[in-house]
Length: 253
Length: 268
Image: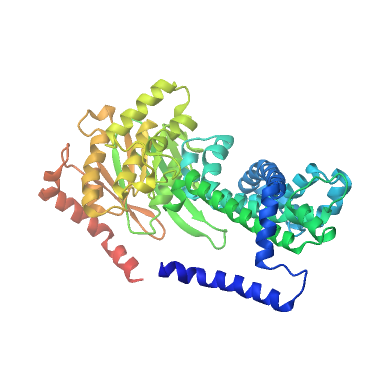
Protein backbone atom coordinates (compact mmCIF):
# COMPACT_ATOMS: atom_id res chain seq x y z
CA UNK A 1 0.00 0.00 0.00
CA UNK A 2 2.69 2.40 1.01
CA UNK A 3 4.63 1.53 -2.10
CA UNK A 4 1.57 2.22 -4.27
CA UNK A 5 1.00 5.53 -2.53
CA UNK A 6 4.55 6.62 -3.28
CA UNK A 7 4.24 5.64 -6.91
CA UNK A 8 0.96 7.52 -7.30
CA UNK A 9 2.20 10.62 -5.53
CA UNK A 10 3.71 12.44 -8.48
CA UNK A 11 0.95 11.81 -11.08
CA UNK A 12 -1.80 12.70 -8.62
CA UNK A 13 0.20 15.71 -7.46
CA UNK A 14 0.58 16.89 -11.04
CA UNK A 15 -3.15 16.56 -11.69
CA UNK A 16 -3.96 18.53 -8.57
CA UNK A 17 -1.42 21.21 -9.48
CA UNK A 18 -2.93 21.42 -12.99
CA UNK A 19 -6.45 21.82 -11.64
CA UNK A 20 -5.36 24.48 -9.16
CA UNK A 21 -3.45 26.47 -11.78
CA UNK A 22 -6.40 26.44 -14.20
CA UNK A 23 -8.79 27.61 -11.46
CA UNK A 24 -6.38 30.36 -10.42
CA UNK A 25 -5.91 31.60 -13.98
CA UNK A 26 -9.67 31.86 -14.46
CA UNK A 27 -9.33 31.33 -18.22
CA UNK A 28 -12.53 29.84 -19.66
CA UNK A 29 -10.67 28.00 -22.41
CA UNK A 30 -7.92 26.34 -20.41
CA UNK A 31 -8.69 22.63 -20.03
CA UNK A 32 -8.55 21.34 -16.49
CA UNK A 33 -8.45 17.68 -15.37
CA UNK A 34 -12.12 17.82 -14.47
CA UNK A 35 -13.27 19.19 -17.83
CA UNK A 36 -10.99 16.74 -19.63
CA UNK A 37 -12.50 13.80 -17.76
CA UNK A 38 -15.98 15.00 -18.58
CA UNK A 39 -15.06 15.46 -22.26
CA UNK A 40 -13.47 12.01 -22.31
CA UNK A 41 -16.61 10.48 -20.89
CA UNK A 42 -18.76 12.17 -23.53
CA UNK A 43 -16.46 11.22 -26.41
CA UNK A 44 -16.29 7.62 -25.30
CA UNK A 45 -20.04 7.38 -24.71
CA UNK A 46 -20.87 8.82 -28.11
CA UNK A 47 -18.46 6.38 -29.78
CA UNK A 48 -16.63 9.19 -31.56
CA UNK A 49 -13.32 8.57 -29.83
CA UNK A 50 -13.33 4.88 -30.59
CA UNK A 51 -14.35 5.46 -34.21
CA UNK A 52 -11.55 7.98 -34.69
CA UNK A 53 -8.99 5.74 -33.06
CA UNK A 54 -10.00 2.64 -34.96
CA UNK A 55 -9.85 4.50 -38.29
CA UNK A 56 -6.31 5.61 -37.47
CA UNK A 57 -5.23 2.21 -36.15
CA UNK A 58 -6.48 0.41 -39.25
CA UNK A 59 -4.56 2.86 -41.44
CA UNK A 60 -1.42 2.36 -39.39
CA UNK A 61 -1.66 -1.41 -39.56
CA UNK A 62 -2.33 -1.38 -43.30
CA UNK A 63 0.59 0.96 -43.99
CA UNK A 64 2.79 -0.99 -41.63
CA UNK A 65 2.07 -4.27 -43.42
CA UNK A 66 2.79 -2.69 -46.80
CA UNK A 67 6.07 -1.31 -45.46
CA UNK A 68 7.14 -4.69 -44.05
CA UNK A 69 6.25 -6.52 -47.25
CA UNK A 70 8.59 -4.27 -49.20
CA UNK A 71 11.28 -3.54 -46.64
CA UNK A 72 12.00 -7.06 -45.35
CA UNK A 73 12.72 -8.73 -48.73
CA UNK A 74 14.57 -5.65 -49.94
CA UNK A 75 16.59 -5.49 -46.73
CA UNK A 76 17.47 -9.18 -46.97
CA UNK A 77 18.78 -8.76 -50.48
CA UNK A 78 20.57 -5.51 -49.67
CA UNK A 79 22.19 -7.08 -46.64
CA UNK A 80 23.19 -10.24 -48.46
CA UNK A 81 24.32 -8.94 -51.85
CA UNK A 82 27.02 -6.32 -51.72
CA UNK A 83 26.43 -4.86 -55.17
CA UNK A 84 22.72 -4.34 -54.55
CA UNK A 85 23.46 -2.55 -51.32
CA UNK A 86 26.06 -0.33 -52.95
CA UNK A 87 23.56 0.72 -55.58
CA UNK A 88 20.56 1.29 -53.37
CA UNK A 89 22.17 2.62 -50.22
CA UNK A 90 22.64 6.20 -51.52
CA UNK A 91 19.00 6.31 -52.64
CA UNK A 92 17.73 5.03 -49.32
CA UNK A 93 19.97 7.29 -47.31
CA UNK A 94 18.90 10.38 -49.19
CA UNK A 95 15.20 9.64 -48.68
CA UNK A 96 15.53 8.57 -45.07
CA UNK A 97 15.99 12.08 -43.61
CA UNK A 98 12.90 13.30 -45.47
CA UNK A 99 10.21 13.09 -42.80
CA UNK A 100 6.96 11.38 -43.67
CA UNK A 101 5.09 14.64 -43.13
CA UNK A 102 7.32 16.31 -45.75
CA UNK A 103 6.04 14.05 -48.50
CA UNK A 104 2.46 14.90 -47.57
CA UNK A 105 1.97 17.58 -50.27
CA UNK A 106 2.99 15.17 -53.02
CA UNK A 107 0.92 12.35 -51.58
CA UNK A 108 -2.18 14.55 -51.38
CA UNK A 109 -1.72 15.73 -54.95
CA UNK A 110 -1.30 12.18 -56.21
CA UNK A 111 -3.59 10.19 -53.98
CA UNK A 112 -6.05 12.70 -52.52
CA UNK A 113 -6.88 12.88 -48.85
CA UNK A 114 -8.51 9.51 -48.23
CA UNK A 115 -7.32 6.18 -46.90
CA UNK A 116 -4.88 5.52 -49.74
CA UNK A 117 -2.95 8.66 -48.99
CA UNK A 118 -2.95 7.93 -45.26
CA UNK A 119 -1.67 4.41 -45.81
CA UNK A 120 1.01 5.70 -48.19
CA UNK A 121 2.30 8.12 -45.55
CA UNK A 122 2.37 5.41 -42.91
CA UNK A 123 4.07 2.94 -45.23
CA UNK A 124 6.72 5.52 -46.08
CA UNK A 125 7.36 6.27 -42.40
CA UNK A 126 7.47 2.62 -41.35
CA UNK A 127 9.60 1.54 -44.31
CA UNK A 128 12.96 2.92 -43.17
CA UNK A 129 13.25 1.50 -39.66
CA UNK A 130 12.31 -1.95 -40.97
CA UNK A 131 14.72 -1.72 -43.90
CA UNK A 132 17.68 -0.43 -41.91
CA UNK A 133 17.25 -3.01 -39.17
CA UNK A 134 16.80 -5.83 -41.66
CA UNK A 135 20.02 -4.89 -43.41
CA UNK A 136 21.98 -4.67 -40.20
CA UNK A 137 20.43 -7.91 -38.99
CA UNK A 138 21.60 -9.72 -42.10
CA UNK A 139 25.06 -8.20 -41.90
CA UNK A 140 25.48 -9.22 -38.29
CA UNK A 141 24.60 -12.86 -38.83
CA UNK A 142 27.17 -15.05 -37.11
CA UNK A 143 29.72 -15.86 -39.86
CA UNK A 144 30.07 -19.43 -38.63
CA UNK A 145 26.37 -20.03 -39.36
CA UNK A 146 26.91 -18.95 -42.95
CA UNK A 147 29.97 -21.14 -43.24
CA UNK A 148 28.05 -24.08 -41.82
CA UNK A 149 25.30 -23.48 -44.37
CA UNK A 150 27.93 -23.18 -47.09
CA UNK A 151 29.50 -26.53 -46.21
CA UNK A 152 26.07 -28.13 -46.42
CA UNK A 153 25.70 -26.81 -49.95
CA UNK A 154 22.70 -24.51 -49.58
CA UNK A 155 21.64 -22.66 -52.70
CA UNK A 156 21.67 -18.85 -52.43
CA UNK A 157 17.88 -18.66 -52.29
CA UNK A 158 17.61 -21.35 -49.63
CA UNK A 159 20.34 -19.61 -47.67
CA UNK A 160 18.25 -16.45 -47.76
CA UNK A 161 15.12 -17.96 -46.26
CA UNK A 162 16.58 -20.77 -44.17
CA UNK A 163 19.50 -18.90 -42.61
CA UNK A 164 19.54 -15.16 -43.19
CA UNK A 165 15.86 -14.46 -42.53
CA UNK A 166 15.59 -16.33 -39.23
CA UNK A 167 19.04 -15.22 -38.09
CA UNK A 168 18.13 -11.59 -38.77
CA UNK A 169 14.65 -11.97 -37.28
CA UNK A 170 15.41 -10.48 -33.86
CA UNK A 171 16.82 -7.38 -35.52
CA UNK A 172 13.95 -7.22 -38.02
CA UNK A 173 11.43 -7.33 -35.20
CA UNK A 174 13.21 -4.53 -33.39
CA UNK A 175 12.90 -2.55 -36.60
CA UNK A 176 9.21 -3.35 -36.78
CA UNK A 177 8.69 -2.21 -33.23
CA UNK A 178 10.33 1.12 -33.97
CA UNK A 179 8.43 1.34 -37.24
CA UNK A 180 5.07 0.91 -35.60
CA UNK A 181 5.80 3.76 -33.21
CA UNK A 182 6.95 5.99 -36.05
CA UNK A 183 3.92 5.02 -38.13
CA UNK A 184 1.54 5.98 -35.34
CA UNK A 185 3.23 9.36 -34.99
CA UNK A 186 3.09 9.87 -38.75
CA UNK A 187 -0.59 9.08 -39.11
CA UNK A 188 -1.60 11.56 -36.40
CA UNK A 189 0.54 14.24 -38.01
CA UNK A 190 -0.83 13.49 -41.46
CA UNK A 191 -4.45 13.50 -40.35
CA UNK A 192 -3.88 16.75 -38.50
CA UNK A 193 -2.27 18.34 -41.51
CA UNK A 194 -4.92 17.17 -43.93
CA UNK A 195 -7.52 18.53 -41.56
CA UNK A 196 -11.20 18.33 -42.30
CA UNK A 197 -10.99 18.75 -46.04
CA UNK A 198 -13.84 17.32 -47.99
CA UNK A 199 -13.06 13.78 -49.03
CA UNK A 200 -10.85 13.06 -46.06
CA UNK A 201 -12.16 10.39 -43.81
CA UNK A 202 -11.70 10.83 -40.14
CA UNK A 203 -9.12 9.45 -37.82
CA UNK A 204 -8.02 10.64 -34.44
CA UNK A 205 -5.78 13.35 -35.92
CA UNK A 206 -8.63 14.83 -37.84
CA UNK A 207 -10.79 14.75 -34.75
CA UNK A 208 -8.15 16.86 -33.05
CA UNK A 209 -8.15 19.23 -35.98
CA UNK A 210 -11.89 19.72 -35.68
CA UNK A 211 -11.60 20.50 -32.00
CA UNK A 212 -8.86 22.95 -32.82
CA UNK A 213 -10.20 24.70 -35.90
CA UNK A 214 -13.99 24.53 -35.59
CA UNK A 215 -15.37 23.83 -32.16
CA UNK A 216 -12.32 25.19 -30.33
CA UNK A 217 -12.66 22.67 -27.57
CA UNK A 218 -9.38 22.33 -25.73
CA UNK A 219 -10.51 19.53 -23.46
CA UNK A 220 -11.30 17.45 -26.54
CA UNK A 221 -7.79 18.03 -27.88
CA UNK A 222 -6.30 16.86 -24.60
CA UNK A 223 -8.51 13.77 -24.65
CA UNK A 224 -7.22 12.95 -28.15
CA UNK A 225 -3.62 13.48 -27.06
CA UNK A 226 -4.09 11.16 -24.11
CA UNK A 227 -5.77 8.56 -26.31
CA UNK A 228 -2.90 8.73 -28.79
CA UNK A 229 -0.47 8.13 -25.95
CA UNK A 230 -2.42 5.20 -24.56
CA UNK A 231 -2.71 3.54 -27.97
CA UNK A 232 1.01 4.02 -28.63
CA UNK A 233 1.81 2.42 -25.31
CA UNK A 234 -0.49 -0.54 -25.94
CA UNK A 235 0.85 -1.09 -29.47
CA UNK A 236 4.40 -1.13 -28.17
CA UNK A 237 3.59 -3.57 -25.39
CA UNK A 238 1.79 -5.80 -27.84
CA UNK A 239 4.76 -5.84 -30.19
CA UNK A 240 7.26 -6.54 -27.46
CA UNK A 241 5.08 -9.41 -26.34
CA UNK A 242 5.17 -10.73 -29.90
CA UNK A 243 8.96 -10.42 -29.91
CA UNK A 244 9.45 -12.79 -27.01
CA UNK A 245 6.90 -15.11 -28.54
CA UNK A 246 8.33 -15.20 -32.07
CA UNK A 247 12.03 -15.25 -31.18
CA UNK A 248 12.30 -16.99 -27.83
CA UNK A 249 15.95 -17.74 -28.48
CA UNK A 250 17.10 -14.14 -28.86
CA UNK A 251 16.42 -13.00 -25.31
CA UNK A 252 17.93 -16.01 -23.69
CA UNK A 253 21.33 -15.66 -25.25
CA UNK B 1 46.34 -47.28 -52.73
CA UNK B 2 45.34 -43.75 -53.55
CA UNK B 3 44.93 -41.58 -50.46
CA UNK B 4 41.47 -40.17 -49.73
CA UNK B 5 42.89 -36.69 -49.49
CA UNK B 6 46.31 -35.54 -50.60
CA UNK B 7 47.92 -32.20 -49.83
CA UNK B 8 50.75 -31.45 -52.22
CA UNK B 9 53.06 -28.53 -51.60
CA UNK B 10 50.29 -26.36 -50.22
CA UNK B 11 51.11 -22.73 -49.52
CA UNK B 12 48.67 -20.26 -48.10
CA UNK B 13 49.18 -16.59 -47.46
CA UNK B 14 46.75 -13.87 -46.58
CA UNK B 15 46.87 -10.21 -47.51
CA UNK B 16 48.73 -8.39 -50.28
CA UNK B 17 51.81 -9.65 -52.01
CA UNK B 18 54.23 -7.22 -50.37
CA UNK B 19 52.69 -7.49 -46.96
CA UNK B 20 51.53 -11.07 -46.94
CA UNK B 21 51.11 -13.20 -43.86
CA UNK B 22 52.27 -16.70 -44.65
CA UNK B 23 49.99 -19.14 -42.86
CA UNK B 24 51.16 -22.38 -44.44
CA UNK B 25 54.34 -23.21 -46.24
CA UNK B 26 54.95 -26.19 -48.49
CA UNK B 27 52.64 -28.51 -46.62
CA UNK B 28 52.28 -32.05 -47.90
CA UNK B 29 50.62 -35.04 -46.30
CA UNK B 30 48.01 -37.66 -47.08
CA UNK B 31 44.84 -38.72 -45.34
CA UNK B 32 43.98 -42.38 -45.92
CA UNK B 33 40.48 -43.67 -46.35
CA UNK B 34 38.92 -44.74 -43.06
CA UNK B 35 41.68 -43.21 -41.01
CA UNK B 36 41.35 -40.96 -38.00
CA UNK B 37 43.95 -38.28 -38.51
CA UNK B 38 44.63 -35.64 -35.88
CA UNK B 39 46.42 -32.38 -36.60
CA UNK B 40 48.18 -30.71 -33.69
CA UNK B 41 50.48 -27.75 -33.36
CA UNK B 42 50.99 -24.58 -31.39
CA UNK B 43 48.61 -21.72 -31.98
CA UNK B 44 49.34 -19.95 -35.23
CA UNK B 45 50.36 -23.11 -37.07
CA UNK B 46 47.47 -22.84 -39.50
CA UNK B 47 45.52 -25.92 -38.36
CA UNK B 48 42.19 -24.26 -38.96
CA UNK B 49 43.37 -22.94 -42.31
CA UNK B 50 44.12 -26.51 -43.42
CA UNK B 51 40.67 -27.60 -42.34
CA UNK B 52 38.95 -24.71 -44.10
CA UNK B 53 40.73 -25.57 -47.32
CA UNK B 54 39.70 -29.22 -47.09
CA UNK B 55 36.15 -28.04 -46.41
CA UNK B 56 36.29 -25.93 -49.57
CA UNK B 57 35.76 -22.69 -47.65
CA UNK B 58 39.19 -21.45 -48.63
CA UNK B 59 41.68 -22.35 -51.33
CA UNK B 60 45.47 -22.68 -51.31
CA UNK B 61 47.59 -19.85 -52.66
CA UNK B 62 49.64 -22.49 -54.44
CA UNK B 63 49.91 -26.25 -54.41
CA UNK B 64 47.15 -28.80 -54.65
CA UNK B 65 44.60 -30.45 -52.46
CA UNK B 66 43.19 -33.58 -54.04
CA UNK B 67 40.13 -35.49 -52.96
CA UNK B 68 40.08 -38.97 -54.57
CA UNK B 69 42.58 -37.53 -57.03
CA UNK B 70 40.49 -34.50 -57.98
CA UNK B 71 41.26 -30.95 -56.87
CA UNK B 72 38.86 -29.55 -54.27
CA UNK B 73 37.05 -26.53 -55.65
CA UNK B 74 34.41 -25.88 -52.99
CA UNK B 75 32.28 -27.51 -50.34
CA UNK B 76 30.75 -30.88 -51.11
CA UNK B 77 28.21 -33.19 -49.57
CA UNK B 78 30.85 -35.90 -49.14
CA UNK B 79 32.64 -33.68 -46.63
CA UNK B 80 31.01 -32.60 -43.39
CA UNK B 81 32.40 -29.95 -41.09
CA UNK B 82 32.06 -29.52 -37.36
CA UNK B 83 33.04 -26.07 -36.15
CA UNK B 84 34.71 -25.09 -32.95
CA UNK B 85 31.74 -22.96 -31.85
CA UNK B 86 29.34 -25.67 -33.15
CA UNK B 87 27.55 -23.15 -35.42
CA UNK B 88 24.12 -24.33 -34.32
CA UNK B 89 21.11 -22.43 -35.59
CA UNK B 90 19.67 -20.82 -32.45
CA UNK B 91 16.14 -20.61 -33.88
CA UNK B 92 15.96 -24.32 -34.57
CA UNK B 93 15.40 -27.08 -32.06
CA UNK B 94 17.80 -29.96 -31.57
CA UNK B 95 15.85 -31.88 -34.18
CA UNK B 96 15.64 -28.86 -36.47
CA UNK B 97 19.40 -28.46 -36.32
CA UNK B 98 20.15 -32.10 -36.95
CA UNK B 99 17.82 -32.28 -39.97
CA UNK B 100 19.00 -28.96 -41.40
CA UNK B 101 21.41 -30.35 -43.99
CA UNK B 102 18.95 -32.99 -45.12
CA UNK B 103 16.15 -30.47 -45.36
CA UNK B 104 17.93 -27.62 -47.13
CA UNK B 105 21.33 -28.79 -48.28
CA UNK B 106 23.02 -31.10 -50.75
CA UNK B 107 23.12 -34.07 -48.36
CA UNK B 108 19.32 -34.22 -48.51
CA UNK B 109 19.01 -34.35 -52.29
CA UNK B 110 17.14 -37.44 -53.34
CA UNK B 111 16.31 -38.39 -49.77
CA UNK B 112 12.59 -39.00 -49.21
CA UNK B 113 10.98 -37.33 -46.24
CA UNK B 114 10.49 -40.73 -44.65
CA UNK B 115 14.13 -41.68 -45.07
CA UNK B 116 15.08 -38.27 -43.77
CA UNK B 117 13.05 -38.73 -40.63
CA UNK B 118 14.64 -42.11 -40.06
CA UNK B 119 18.13 -40.73 -40.51
CA UNK B 120 17.44 -37.86 -38.13
CA UNK B 121 15.98 -40.23 -35.54
CA UNK B 122 19.03 -42.46 -35.84
CA UNK B 123 21.40 -39.51 -35.51
CA UNK B 124 19.56 -38.26 -32.42
CA UNK B 125 19.78 -41.69 -30.83
CA UNK B 126 23.41 -42.13 -31.83
CA UNK B 127 24.56 -38.94 -30.13
CA UNK B 128 22.38 -39.62 -27.11
CA UNK B 129 19.92 -36.76 -27.43
CA UNK B 130 16.67 -38.72 -27.35
CA UNK B 131 14.20 -36.80 -25.22
CA UNK B 132 15.87 -33.45 -25.92
CA UNK B 133 14.71 -33.18 -29.55
CA UNK B 134 12.50 -30.18 -28.97
CA UNK B 135 14.89 -28.10 -26.92
CA UNK B 136 16.60 -25.04 -28.29
CA UNK B 137 20.41 -24.70 -28.25
CA UNK B 138 20.31 -22.01 -25.57
CA UNK B 139 18.60 -24.47 -23.25
CA UNK B 140 21.45 -26.97 -23.57
CA UNK B 141 24.78 -27.41 -21.83
CA UNK B 142 28.03 -27.13 -23.80
CA UNK B 143 28.37 -30.90 -23.98
CA UNK B 144 24.86 -31.31 -25.33
CA UNK B 145 25.38 -28.60 -27.94
CA UNK B 146 28.46 -30.44 -29.04
CA UNK B 147 26.32 -33.56 -29.42
CA UNK B 148 23.84 -31.64 -31.55
CA UNK B 149 26.65 -30.50 -33.82
CA UNK B 150 27.90 -34.07 -34.06
CA UNK B 151 24.37 -35.29 -34.75
CA UNK B 152 23.97 -32.80 -37.57
CA UNK B 153 27.26 -33.98 -39.00
CA UNK B 154 26.43 -37.69 -38.95
CA UNK B 155 22.85 -37.18 -40.19
CA UNK B 156 24.32 -35.74 -43.37
CA UNK B 157 26.33 -38.97 -43.76
CA UNK B 158 29.50 -37.49 -45.21
CA UNK B 159 32.41 -39.79 -46.10
CA UNK B 160 34.85 -37.38 -44.56
CA UNK B 161 34.43 -35.66 -41.22
CA UNK B 162 36.38 -32.44 -40.73
CA UNK B 163 36.43 -31.34 -37.13
CA UNK B 164 37.86 -28.08 -35.90
CA UNK B 165 38.67 -28.37 -32.19
CA UNK B 166 35.16 -29.59 -31.48
CA UNK B 167 35.84 -30.41 -27.84
CA UNK B 168 37.96 -27.38 -26.97
CA UNK B 169 35.19 -25.41 -25.29
CA UNK B 170 34.19 -28.20 -22.90
CA UNK B 171 35.30 -28.90 -19.37
CA UNK B 172 37.85 -31.68 -18.83
CA UNK B 173 35.43 -34.39 -17.67
CA UNK B 174 32.93 -33.80 -20.45
CA UNK B 175 35.74 -33.80 -22.95
CA UNK B 176 37.01 -37.20 -21.87
CA UNK B 177 33.52 -38.68 -22.06
CA UNK B 178 32.87 -37.20 -25.48
CA UNK B 179 36.22 -38.41 -26.82
CA UNK B 180 35.11 -41.97 -26.15
CA UNK B 181 31.66 -41.21 -27.59
CA UNK B 182 33.29 -39.81 -30.68
CA UNK B 183 35.29 -43.01 -31.22
CA UNK B 184 32.14 -45.08 -30.80
CA UNK B 185 30.24 -42.96 -33.32
CA UNK B 186 33.14 -43.03 -35.73
CA UNK B 187 33.03 -46.80 -35.49
CA UNK B 188 36.24 -47.90 -33.79
CA UNK B 189 34.57 -51.23 -32.97
CA UNK B 190 33.79 -51.94 -36.60
CA UNK B 191 36.04 -53.05 -39.43
CA UNK B 192 38.35 -50.41 -40.81
CA UNK B 193 36.77 -50.44 -44.29
CA UNK B 194 33.45 -49.24 -42.92
CA UNK B 195 34.88 -46.32 -40.95
CA UNK B 196 34.64 -42.77 -42.12
CA UNK B 197 37.69 -40.68 -42.79
CA UNK B 198 38.29 -38.08 -40.09
CA UNK B 199 40.53 -35.08 -39.87
CA UNK B 200 40.46 -33.78 -36.34
CA UNK B 201 42.16 -30.49 -35.53
CA UNK B 202 43.06 -30.01 -31.91
CA UNK B 203 45.57 -28.37 -29.63
CA UNK B 204 45.26 -31.17 -27.09
CA UNK B 205 48.13 -33.62 -27.45
CA UNK B 206 46.50 -36.24 -25.19
CA UNK B 207 43.32 -35.91 -27.19
CA UNK B 208 45.14 -36.41 -30.49
CA UNK B 209 46.98 -39.49 -29.19
CA UNK B 210 43.83 -40.98 -27.70
CA UNK B 211 41.73 -40.53 -30.81
CA UNK B 212 43.94 -40.80 -33.84
CA UNK B 213 45.58 -43.40 -36.02
CA UNK B 214 48.19 -40.86 -37.00
CA UNK B 215 49.03 -37.41 -35.70
CA UNK B 216 50.25 -34.68 -37.99
CA UNK B 217 52.42 -32.24 -36.06
CA UNK B 218 52.73 -28.73 -37.44
CA UNK B 219 55.15 -25.97 -36.51
CA UNK B 220 54.08 -22.37 -36.50
CA UNK B 221 54.85 -19.09 -38.30
CA UNK B 222 54.53 -20.27 -40.97
CA UNK B 223 52.74 -23.58 -40.58
CA UNK B 224 55.02 -26.37 -41.77
CA UNK B 225 54.94 -30.09 -41.42
CA UNK B 226 57.12 -31.05 -38.47
CA UNK B 227 56.40 -34.75 -38.18
CA UNK B 228 53.79 -37.43 -38.67
CA UNK B 229 53.53 -39.75 -35.68
CA UNK B 230 51.96 -43.19 -35.99
CA UNK B 231 49.77 -44.00 -33.01
CA UNK B 232 50.05 -47.75 -32.55
CA UNK B 233 47.69 -47.99 -29.58
CA UNK B 234 45.24 -50.87 -30.02
CA UNK B 235 41.55 -50.25 -30.68
CA UNK B 236 39.00 -50.10 -29.24
CA UNK B 237 40.50 -47.47 -27.00
CA UNK B 238 39.05 -46.63 -23.61
CA UNK B 239 39.97 -45.56 -20.11
CA UNK B 240 42.65 -48.26 -19.99
CA UNK B 241 44.35 -46.76 -23.00
CA UNK B 242 44.98 -43.50 -21.16
CA UNK B 243 46.75 -45.38 -18.35
CA UNK B 244 49.09 -47.32 -20.63
CA UNK B 245 52.80 -46.58 -20.78
CA UNK B 246 52.67 -46.33 -24.56
CA UNK B 247 50.03 -43.56 -24.35
CA UNK B 248 52.29 -41.50 -22.09
CA UNK B 249 55.28 -42.20 -24.30
CA UNK B 250 53.54 -41.04 -27.48
CA UNK B 251 52.15 -37.94 -25.78
CA UNK B 252 55.63 -37.13 -24.53
CA UNK B 253 57.09 -37.65 -27.99
CA UNK B 254 54.67 -35.18 -29.55
CA UNK B 255 55.10 -32.72 -26.73
CA UNK B 256 58.88 -32.76 -27.33
CA UNK B 257 58.22 -31.88 -30.95
CA UNK B 258 56.24 -28.75 -30.22
CA UNK B 259 57.48 -27.78 -26.76
CA UNK B 260 60.02 -25.22 -27.81
CA UNK B 261 57.60 -23.38 -30.05
CA UNK B 262 54.80 -23.58 -27.56
CA UNK B 263 57.02 -21.94 -24.96
CA UNK B 264 58.06 -19.29 -27.41
CA UNK B 265 54.44 -18.57 -28.31
CA UNK B 266 53.50 -18.29 -24.63
CA UNK B 267 56.35 -15.98 -23.74
CA UNK B 268 55.83 -13.68 -26.68
